[in-house]
Amino acid sequence: MKVSADDNTRKVNKVMVEIGGYIEFEHYLLPMLHEKAVALNCGRNCLAYLIEAKKIKKISLPYFLCDSVIKLCKSYGIEIHYYHVNESFLPENILLDDDEWLYVVNYYGQVSSSQILALQKQFLRIIVDNAQAYFDMPVEGIDTLYTCRKFFGVPDGAFLYTDSLLERGIEQDESFERMHFLLGRYERKASEFYDEYVNNNVLFESEPIKKMSKLTQNLLHSFDYNRIKKIRTDNYAYVSDKLGNRNLLNPKKVEGAFAYPLMLENGASIKKKLIEKKIYIPTLWPNVLETLDASSLEYKLAEQIIPIPCDQRYGEEELEYVCTLIKGLEK
View 1 (cartoon, rainbow, N blue to C red):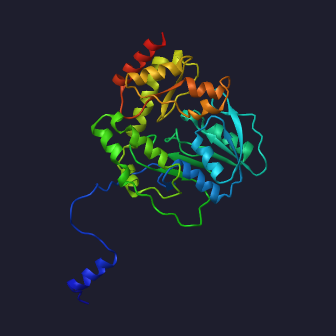
View 2: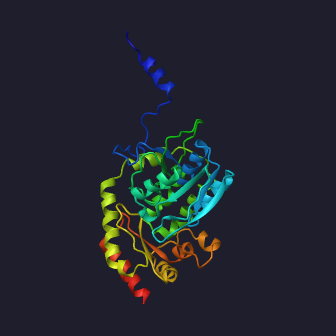
């Protein structure tokens, strides 16, 4: 049967396709890490997803933790218990109720798959937070979450491995209005857009569970993950070689590292001095300094750890500069 031009036009109109006009972002097609996971808008909402899907009522959280996770659990009316970690970042003195879940944070990628598996065998119901271990693949059968913004220049994004899916529908996030600070950081100094970056982070404290935005998914299909992982691994090894003998911790080798955790007695003052020199080293989980006693290990970890960037933007030249500065400031 012959189809007229009018017939074709009507078919196109039904699906509301736009043809022509100005060209948008390229559509990237490279393989994406965590392709088979549930793609959500933020790591916080990966936990929210699990709370709903698994009907979690009780959870044991580490004292050494971002307060956004605590706030989330409280917003769901979850009964919260807390536990301590040791200098190897592993849980200590855990005692769970029969219906309680253990939330395990893979700090700086220091918790191995074998250690996670051992925890799962002991406690059965565990959730692994790999926000700082993007290149660690999940242990099969264990609910595991990842966040994209700590590793890549994207405005949103998180992945969740789970065997429990929400029955209700979830709307898709949109990120085009939250790209300004990333585009600005590319062409200018980070300090000019820092407030926008902070506001974007704060936004997710109140955002509902949503699917990852199409824009972020597209960007995640553009990265050379093998290259990025190698750079992060090499940078971590370089910093470890230069500063490892000063470290109060004994961190293990990490593939695709988030940052190198250098713990020094005067770490807090060194971080301030580095920031004055435009080396932007954060104090991770500053809420710990407000809620725990100064004698606790968690307080010391938050105060004294200098998380040295190991990401794909840098190489030996930049890291040599940072390491030399730290050695000078330590004296």
